Amino acid sequence: MAESDVIRTRRLTRYFGHKAVVEELDFAVPRGQIVGLLGLNGAGKTTTIRMLLGLLEPTRGSCEVLGVDSRCLTPETRARIGHTVEGHFLYPWMRVRECERFGRETHPRWDGGFFERSVRRFGIDTEAKVAWLSRGQRAGVSLASTLASNPELLILDDPALGLDPVSRRALNETILEFCQSGQRSVLLSSHLLDDVERVADRVALMVDGTMVVNTTIDHFRARIAAWTIDAPDSPTAAGNLSMPVPIPRIVNCRPLGQRWQVTVVDPDEDTRAALSAIESRAMEPADVTFEDAVLAYLSRSRVYHSFYTEDAS
Amino acid sequence: MQIRVVPGSGAAIYRQIADQVQRAVAAGELAVGDPLPSVRALAKELVVNPNTVAKAYAELVADGVLETQPGRGVFVTERRAVYSQDERLRRLDEALETAVNESIRLDFSNAEILERMSVQLDKLNSRGKQNG
Image (cartoon, each protein chain N blue to C red):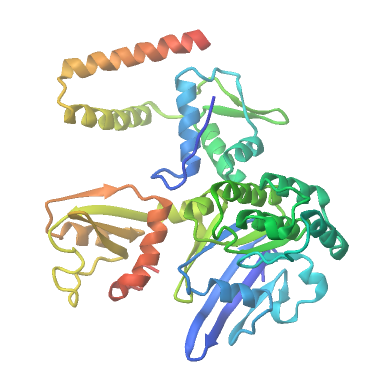
């Protein structure tokens, strides 16, 4: 494990019954980086996170967090890892300031100022009982408690699930403030692509238990290109799904009104040749947004299994 | 000067920031010697990763729009010629091509396009003088 990696998995694999939920995962989070972990529900994100935290045994392979194998994390190492779980569990009978005191008494490196600032961003009254809070505010308290314990590594499992726009903004601000020093790292699992594009340095994209993309956001965007093609039939299917026309490095082809959008990774001479061989009325390059690029990968997994090519991954 | 970013658009966030600063300088909204917000302050204001702002600034420094004064911050600089004459012409042609294509699609004559173009340039120049 490189000195600079805070998370490292080696061929990490987990089966549930006969189904591999995470398969041969090789992946690292460099120190000081915010990594957005993306994927459809069931892609293996939460299972991976649970193995990282030592809450679930890998079937094969291994993972290390802060240089320690996840299966033997000591309480000292655990204290350096912060994580929130889906749904943000808190004791409903506590008041917010009692959550703060609870945190202060259970964490040696508690940062009360950070807690204060974070809950204020979420618009939370510290006298309020947890049971009275909205979902977004509960997320705020849970996140503030986790971050105020001053961890080096933060693992957030879909913290934005069901948040209102104000809480989403507060969440992004809190994550960015937490990382200000450049020494702390975050693994952020999320479905909110706009937020990931805002805050993350890197993007890791899981499809069916394997990692298909793991790079910086800018690099990811730069490698993806798209064309809109005005043709009566799908250019990859030629009217017959069992006989697709091969386009090297294709990620996805989807209908766009009367036209087709073909998304490609690292287009080369062969790609261009294949594209120009398609009979079409018009073909032009299309702008690719971060969302387009991610969706191209995700929807391929859901719909276009037959168009998998080795190259595109 | 107000910078705004929109995630989920065709341009990367660092590109949106760089383009807006460049435009503000060209329009005279920012004059030579004006300071820009620090990387950290702008990142906080826009709620984006500071590395994104740093990347935009680095590109603007490389393009000769901004300069870093160690210990003081980032400032708009006297425009340096960072491109060769050929490269400048190539970039100009590239920029004009988009504008020309759009204009022709709207069915304007050459004379009309040229006239509007010079009106736009005059507007820019007078604004630059007011602020400068």
